Structure formats: C-alpha cells, structure tokens
Length: 315
Image (cartoon, rainbow, N blue to C red):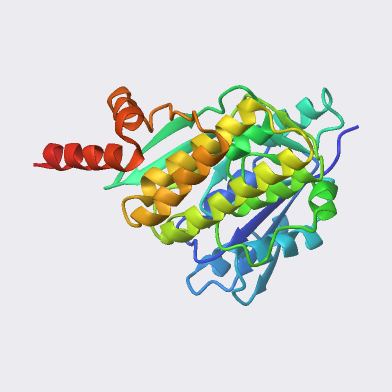
C-alpha cells in the first residue's frame, strides 16, 4: 500500500505562474495526494489566484518571511509521509509523483528519490526546454560537491528525514536545497537515483534568490564544499574521487570569482593545491589550451590569457 504525498507550494509574487503550478499538482495521476499552498505575503494577485481553486487545495497566507520559513510551515501543515515541493514558478509533468512512488517499492529504505530536471528557459518572448542529466557516478556526495543534485521540485522527500535534521534552515540566504542535502547526507539519509525527469524548472528572471548576489552564492557554496570535505575526512570516507570532485568545484568557483575578486580566487586555488599538490582542472571549465597555460604558468596567468582571449573575441 502506497503512502500519501503532500505537494507543497510556497508562493511569493508569482501571479504569472502560480495557476499552472497548482494545476500541475492537482493533475498528478497519483491519487493519494494533497495540495497545500502557502502565500508568503504576496503583493500581486497571487493570493487571489490561489483562492480561486476553492476546496481543491488547502491554502494559508502569512506575512513575507522567506522561502525556507514557508517550506517549514508547509511541512507542519502536511499529512503525507512523502513530500513533493514545488516552487510557484515551476510545474510538474502529470505522472511525476506516481513514477517516483512506484520506484520506492524497489528501494523502500530510501529517504530522497532524486531525478534529472527539465529546464525551461524564457527569453525575449521565446521559450525552450533542455534536459539536464545527472552524470554518473551516482554517489550523492560527489553529486552534491559538483552541484549536480537537482533543484527543489525534482526529488520526492521522506517527510521524517527532513524533520530528523531540523527542517529547512530558516536564515539560509541561497543554496538552500544544497544546505539541506548536506545535512541529510551527514545524518546518513539514503539517496536513490531515479532516471526519469518529471519536474520543470523555469529560468526566466535574473532576480531570483540563486542569481541576485553572486558573491553570497560563491561564499555559501564554498562553505558547503568545506563542510563536505571535513565531514568525509573525519569519517575516513574522503575517497580520491570525492576529493577530486570537491577540488574541481572549488576551481570552477575560483574561475568565476576571479572576474570580480582576484585575491579571493587565488586563495581558493591555493587551498586546492595545499590539499592536492598535483591538481589539474578538467571539464568544460578548463579547455585544453587553458589547462596547458595552467600547468605551465599557474592559475592567475591562465586567467589573464583567458581574459585576453575573451576581449579579442568581443572585438
């Protein structure tokens, strides 16, 4: 017998999208569900749209307190054993919940079922979708370090697992799901990969939490990388693959940080080489020519050459 799923939708000033979000929740083919919406002090017509669904949903309205406070309140309101979070500007494919619930029968001890997302881009009056795979190995520690664990609406979350780690961190300014993923992994909660995508993650604004303050994003991400490393090292679980993933993530942050704070970026690279003296970057963030310059001349010179190349291409 399957368990009830609570579909939880925090909303703040999302009048453009909230109707489709709620509709996609109600249209889930999985029958044992409830849809709960919390309006976080919207000043647009969001609450009016929410109320239009009548008794098909349960809703509540509060003063604006932020996304994680709203998510924690939604947990309190929920009655399901499993939680499906859905941001108000995203939506779900009709069989998303049903497919993941069916998968749980194969992995009954799972606490988080995570899947790839479909990104939907909106720009200049056009929209298009892109499938974002979650690459192997499906070691959740590596996936977290590389920022490959998906956005909030992709997983199905065991309610008790989130409660066990104290819920969402109310004052986390960004990287909110990543911070929660970290605490769940540190609490030894079980993550299972399900390969089918059922969540649509919209990319339509530069003013979202994950884009507003790039310095804060880099600070919070590097703090999470540090905690991953310290935890795994303390437990004797920092394998070479995991160490490489952490250092590659730091390198990619350093490349972006270099554009606005060269000293900080250099410090990040120094930290990498203190831990792994033979570190060599890889992947799309370090093309062949860049890696050659990095090996011969070091990080700062490689960045200067990359900056020169960008300027020439612009001209």
